[in-house]
Image 1 (cartoon, one colour):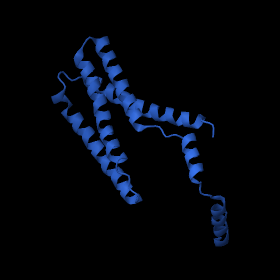
Image 2 (cartoon, helix red, strand yellow):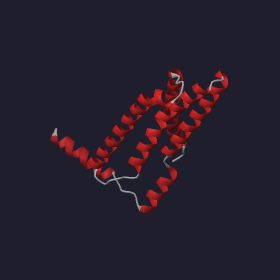
Image 3 (tube, one colour):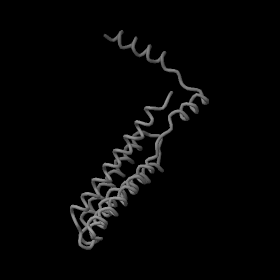
Length: 157
């Protein structure tokens, strides 16, 4: 059993060949990464559109503000999370993971605080409107990530 394991490691080591600098540059050109800031911008744009539509359809600005606040409760903490994690890359895996968990905790706490403060900050708060804003922002996040993934998968190698 041990001999089979060693043979597998040898084959894997032989199959792995590091890329040259030019090959790495070419690979990056063929596989561009999508921007998570773009995803946030899409969330914000969709949220503004849905809030405006809600205001127009209902004729009540309170509902539009409630939807917008729901979007803000998702996008605001996510922007802070992204700012905190992107700018602080570390070479140590443990440090990077700790940084990720720290900013995720901050994002969750800030989202909860924003939701708790909603009745005080939004006049005539509509909880269904706020919920619609939350759902729109979360769904746009997943749809944007899925779109980036599909676009990357369609690129020729």
